[in-house]
Length: 448
Ligand SMILES: O=C(O)C1=C[C@@H](OP(=O)(O)O)[C@@H](O)[C@H](O)C1
Ligand SMILES: C=C(OP(=O)(O)O)C(=O)O
Image (cartoon, rainbow, N blue to C red; front, top):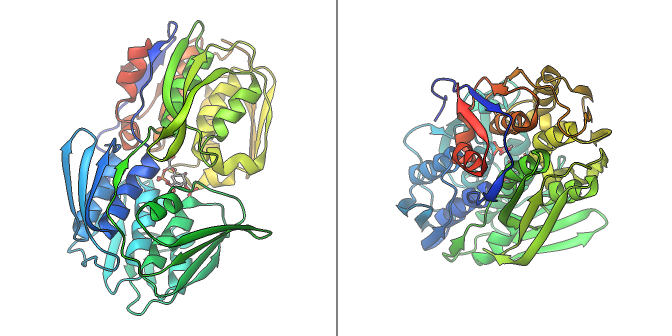
């Protein structure tokens, strides 16, 4: 999907109390990886709970283009007949990863150590995002990449015919870059080593172990040293995808700011590389109870009981927490607008290279809603207006960014006047049932 269709304006008006259970769909990061690792295994991987968002559907299509047999059997139930490590065949056409940074970067890594050429593109948002962060380490394996200025898509990657293993220290805290290097390392003989100073989401490491790769993680003074043995035969798995904590953030935060709300959000990941938002909200004084802790799909999860919280205080979010809540800053900045005092988010410059420049998109939209903002290259500061304090009454630009669209629709649920977004169509990339789920809890979100 290289372009969205028509823009889909949407408006969210003040909501009555939210009630009920918010069962959000499968985790996007784990869904991409289940398809990609399944394609690299020999035999049939069975997946349940797959997120059927556009980003993941684009990865499914890409895996077919590289020769894997990917079949949908029912809602969320998929199978992948893999071709084995190094078994990809050259795609006959351009690979279109739509809106998905995760999709394109992980797939580039996967094909970079196989002797073939593939050309990648995406929508207008993805074509602006930097790919040099993955093609730089992939070139160390012997791959070559030819893209537009600044390492932008469309880009052609020529895979290494005789790949060599790599030792690479990540210059940026990014699970996408880490995963691209590990995926490339699968088809390089010998040991590939990735060193990350700050821990990022660890789904690739967990899944590689599950599929039978030899991988070790050592904590050293340099950070996490991840060592992978190349050329394993990956064994097909049964993957039960847990719910997405980044999607769960939207009903959770909505319930915190909409007066009288009391909802249950089941199966929210407590994986320490993903739960930064929930720690931050608790520190702000949010009324969240973590009930029934258990394992689901190999991830620690809990059910969250979330109540309207009229006593939240702005805080300083520790910068080292950023990787564990990187996609949640837009919705956190909405909650911060309904807290008392200022919330300071430092060390967040990575937000500028997501589907949009998320610091700029949130700053401009919140200002239009009457909120005072300070920002610099690496910082966002929101001056809270207290419960019910945000005037609202604006139309916010979403810049092809699902998280910006959902964040402003949640803001409208508690603001004094309705909040509109110019284009809600990108929400289908990660949370296709957002509108129905939120309205089912009691929200008033309508098209137009
Ligand atoms: O590896 C992943 O699945 C993801 C990693 C993060 O990106 P970066 O690795 O670029 O920080 C995150 O923003 C993205 O939504 C999903
Ligand atoms: C940044 C995100 O995704 P991606 O990088 O995969 O486009 C996101 O989902 O917030």
